[in-house]
Length: 235
Picture (cartoon, rainbow, N blue to C red):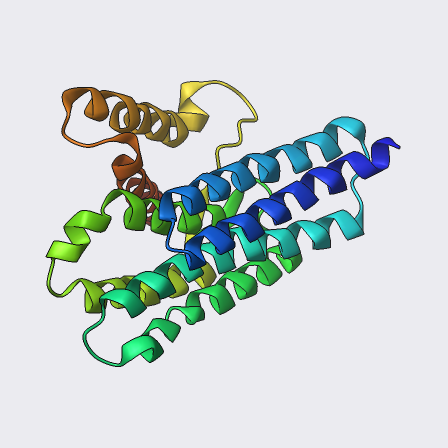
């Protein structure tokens, strides 16, 4: 019985991704983001449960990637497609198809992750959950500001292409995995956690932004820290 628990949790991730995609089609981005976050929680606990119960399996690994394609690839891509199609003054609904590239690159990134044995304590390229949370929170938290920003559509499309590159890039990015708790070996992780907590908790209290608006900034900060750390490691 216990061998089915991690796969059941993974299926909950998949269903969350389907729900997020459905809400995105309806233009209800807050609900779509909520189910992306719920999917991310299930995505964390399926691997945790598999390790705890010692029931990891090849089918579980493949099922996890298939679920992630939906929750962290298709769902945020649908949000961006709908936003671009609705707000574009040229190309009609067809320009809204361009962000579909992001779903394809998310799938490619997940396929590479399954085969890449280097990504045990970190990532090579941007993880799909981070990309999904960035786009979900950007379109939800900053939607009103984007509507008032005239070149928003081309800027978002350029950012989408940058996301596609980062997903399959060879840039090392740290993971929030701790072998020890000392500062020396985990300085970057602690710095990221402390500053992220400040952005997500303190800024909303000041009224400068809410927590959803802070999420894209946190993801951008994660990318900058990862690039800086990778550059330092090569120096």
